[in-house]
Amino acid sequence: MGDDIIIRVQSPDGMKKIPSTKRETAAAFLKKVAKEFGFNSNGFSIYLNRNKTGEILSQNKTLTLLKIKHGDMLFLFPSGSSSSSGEVMDTATPHTSSSLPSISSSSSSSSSSSSLIPRSSSAPQVQEDEIDQYLAKQDGKIYRNKDPQLCRHGALGKCVHCVPLEPFDEDYLNHLDPPVKHMSFHAYLRKLTGGADKGKFAALENISCKIKSGCEGHSPWPEGICTKCQPSAITLNRQKYRHVDNIMFENHTIADRFLDFWRKTGSQRMGYLYGRYTEHTDIPLGIRAEVAAIYEPPQSATQNSLELLEDPKAAAVDEIAAKLGLCKVGWIFTDLLSEDTRIGTVRYSRNQDSFYLSAEECITAGYFQNQHSNSCRLSRDGYFGSKFVTVVATGGPDNQVHFEGYQVSNQCMALVRDECLLPCKDAPELGYAKESSPEQYVPDVFYKDKDKFGNDVTFLARPLPVEYLIIDITTTFPKDPQYTFTSTQRFPIENRDILGETQDFHSLATYLSQCSSASFLDIVSDFHLLLFLVTNEVMPLRDSIGLLLDAVKTSNEELAQTWKKSEQWATIEQLCSTVGGQPSSSLGYEAMGGPAAPASSSAMWSCLHCTFMNQPGTEHCEICSLPRS
Image (cartoon, rainbow, N blue to C red; front, top):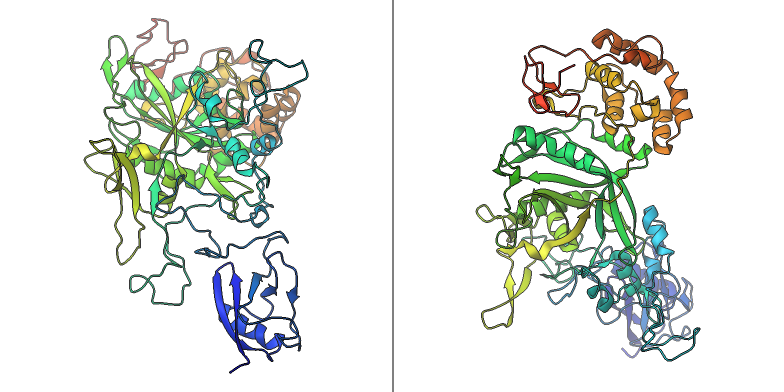
């Protein structure tokens, strides 16, 4: 009995006590450890110290010779782990999962937590977005000039009144005009990775609301659950940062063309925003989503509802956008109701007395953000949060159309991803955290509010005010319009057949006839035209349009002229000539100056001057009174 000893072994899954003897060899002891932790013989390494020094090898030396005594703590590291020699294990509180760190508890103060796990255990091979790589290299500090009244030092000196501020300085952000409620995501990263340790142990954890699989100590849910596999409760808090700090439409034309559908039908409309992420200089280390085009997928809409339909062209649209240097940065939808049609006002319905985003819209935004996660090197999963934005076109306080930008918090994304959040039927401003069932365990979700006495009280999120899930983002238009697509004419937008606006070769012939004086690059520099050239069923150019997309991306007229001489464009011209009777066999447009023939005398027609959709049988526009031709 005097030879019996117990050795403690600490692993990422927790600590276990291994019974042994003083005369037991290291090889036999390692076999016991492998059996206890469920590893094969080569699946782990054991060290005497936390910093991975003093490795215990499989040999015939006894534990006594290795100076291992009763009660000693050894440290196990799974092989293949990206942990470095500087890794430190938390011996007081073991992680709840070996693949996912423990999530925010009921006393959590943010949507995600940083824990003492080394940055090297994240995913350094993750390819981050270009804007993230650029901002990671920037200094980010807020430089201030010498104060003539408070500073008493020389020109080269610095004091507390003029020393540069960190990008996450809350006092500075609160004194901006207007005040900034949320620091930028990269400023938040600087806050995590600052200090004496330079963020050596900072990491971002994605919240999980699911039971950890593979727990063998009990029967699976609903028969059993333990603290090791049970997800922690979540307390909703205002997220201190946001992944996107500004949304900017390049010009008013993009938004006006999108709103035309509502103006002509009264039905709501939804579209995907395509653009790019750039630096937003108004906020330290800020990110701006610039919108260059809106793609409208197939949908069924009424005055009060929207339903997205299956889109067979979705992959092609993303591919074309990528070749143009664009990506899907968000989605936009309308919620408009006419107030007075005589003066063109709309109803102001979304405000502090009703809601800004309904619970159903928050769930949809969370779904889209989960689909477009943000690559991040500080996360073990390789992703954290999302840059995908939501824009609502709705009535403002002045009864004019306003564009409001939002995102939902990372906590909301987790609740939506794990199917824990539901909308309320009769109260759009309220969500509802699901209750656990035999099919699904749902952790408790709480939020804090003040009671009638002014005390902070914790409430169960059944129901849940969606204000706890929303992050607002400023939406702007530039003073000087920008144009990624420079065409001055308007090619019909996809999926608007209900308006009589169809994308076919007759529409293409009409469009080309209106562009007789423009250069070829300006003619083809239209996002909706390029989509039609690639996705039409008669003559799809998906495999041969690469050169033209490069020309539009780089604004290179020579490349455009080179592609213009291809067989594919000659075929397109011939098809237009056959259908619409407009293009000539030559490759110039001087011969296309005549007006396009109407598709049908019984169809609505668009005025060439003001684009108003007129009723069939009329020869003059009802708005501008100009002739049809």
